[in-house]
Structure formats: structure tokens, C-alpha cells
Length: 133
Image 1 (cartoon, rainbow, N blue to C red):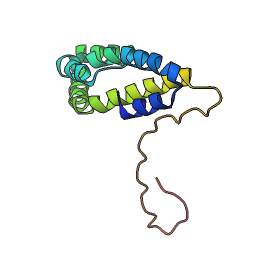
Image 2: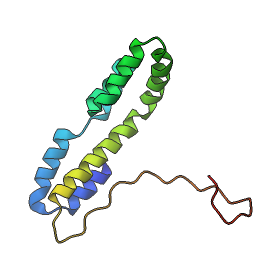
Image 3: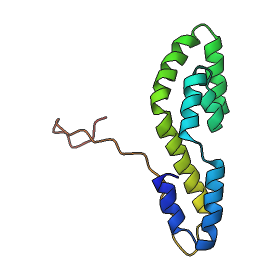
């Protein structure tokens, strides 16, 4: 379990904690399996099928089978080998949040959803009092 899911489990009602943990373990994705699928079947989108993103998996498969798709799938596969563990943790955090909302007591405010890390803001060096992207 990720630290976020453990925090959510502690905040739930005691009678709902066991069900939450059971369903989390049932639907959570293992980062090791995801990495192995990425290494072995990443060119055809094997990890996308594992995460349930069938549209991406089919597009990766079709891109590999086309001649131009090789130029797309190989760099994506290399990048995905390094980012799959974080994607798996993000998937598991979202799963924990979804399950916690199901078992959260009605009298208590719902937990905050996991947010991606904020990008640092560039300093305003132009003197213009507006943000420039």
C-alpha cells in the first residue's frame, strides 16, 4: 500500500477499514509486474492493457505494426521504462481515493484528492505585472 492509501485507511471508520484494504489489494497494480510488462511487451503497449487503458494499448500496437510507428513506439517505450513505477503509484493513489470516497463517513468532510506536484513558477523579470507562460 502506498503512504497515501495507508493514511486514508487510518481515517476510515473501523468497520470499513477491512473492506477498504481488501478491495485496494484486489484492484491495486503491482509496480514490479508493470515494469516487467513494460520491458517485455512495452513496444506493443502491454502495460497499458494491464492498467486498463485499452485505447492507448491498441494505438501502440497499431503504431508498431505501421512502418512510421516504430519511430514513435521505441522512444515512448524507453521513456515508459523509467516512468512506469510513478504511474503505477499514481494509479494506486487514485484507486485508494476512489475507494475511500465509497466508505467515507457522511458526517466528515471527504479527503482531498491526490494532486500532482506543482511546477515551480518562473520569476517575473520583465517588470510587467502579469504572468508570462
